[in-house]
Image (cartoon, rainbow, N blue to C red; front, top):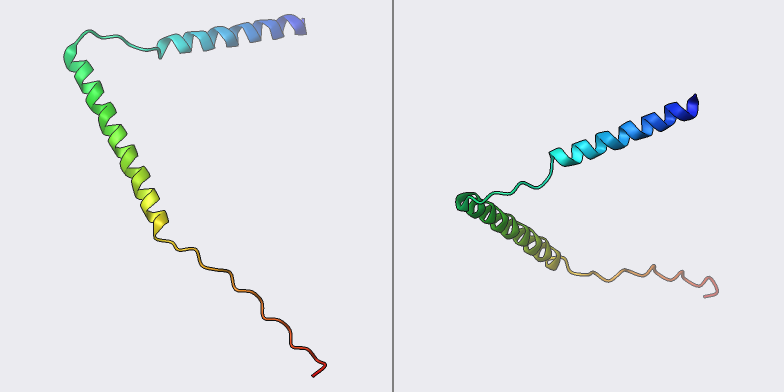
Length: 79
């Protein structure tokens, strides 16, 4: 009985996942205004990403690598 219940549960889970994937699929449109809107938003997102990348690379250029200080050698006690 447990094997049958497990098989039914797995099947229902798979069916639920398949149904969810179909609801959120790619939508097609032949409307040129919608296509232009999508292209404009994609270009805006790309410009924002490039601006963020250049900003983060510029902030990294301001930090100079400082040499690490070596610990002072201990004074010899034989003097």
